[in-house]
Amino acid sequence: MVRIFEWFKRAKPFTNCYFELCTIHVRDIMARDVMTVGRYDNLVDAAHTMIGAHISCLVVLEKQKPVGILTERDFIKKLSMAKDHSAELLVNDIMTKELFAVGSHLSLFEAQKLMKAHKFRKLVVVEGDELRGIITQTDLCKAVAKVKSSCPRAPIIADVMSKKVLMVGADDSFIKAKKLMASKDIGSVLVADKGAIKGMFTEFDIVSEFFLNPNRLRNSYMSELMTVPVICISPDFDMFEVNHLMLEHNFRRLPVIADNKLVGIVTQTDVAWHLYDFIEENKNCGDERLKRRSAELKYAVKKTGNMILYQKVFENSKQELAGSEKHRFSENKVLEKK
Image (cartoon, rainbow, N blue to C red):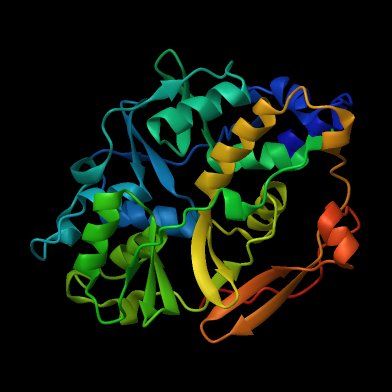
């Protein structure tokens, strides 16, 4: 994080944030202190490391060489629920063994294109056979949030969100939710009853529950495992704003609520993929389509039932229509996940 700050402190001003981002490479923002694990280490211990460090992956080493990666998604797609044997599982049993590695010379746009093409959320950085670092989609999002140049006026999240939200019931089993998440290759499901949001269950929850009690999951239900309250957002934030909000509060996915109804969901993956594409597509846009990034957004936070809703606040109708820059983040305290 210090390295990113120092780089941006030295950076020259640009007329468009695209050209500023083009000067940054993977080596400038990648994490160099990579959390690792051995392929024959106990899987429960690996889950403990991920939960304790609050990270979504571990690079797997064998003889000090990277040979794979263990991610939260591996727990969804490969963790067997056939019998009570989870406590005996090894990292090797579920890790991704085909390691996709890149060099540190890549630009951020090249890294983003690779992630999007292969549906990766992180890239391992190597030189020869030696592990040098890791870059994630969160790092890409942080780089955009740090730019000082003017940016194109971005579309609102209603235009980029996923409109199909997968849902399960509070009485549905963990096994049903896991199968649904694995089949659709997604990291979360909403728990709902007659259209009303009751909670959310994510890939992080699977890793956490597996660490706490490996054999409890197969006999559990969503009502026991879901996270409450669910952090939601109104659909009128633009992509830069929702990126800032996610980074500020460590949100990775936000159901979208309009007129008290669920209308979609936006994830950090959506933001990372769409932001870079949008910035590149608008690299030559004129001054009339650019805005400074110095202004901050004002928002309100409201708790309703099992939801905490972030709503964009406008000073007046003129500012709403013009996309005013005179907004600032409020000091509303964010309720933490139970």
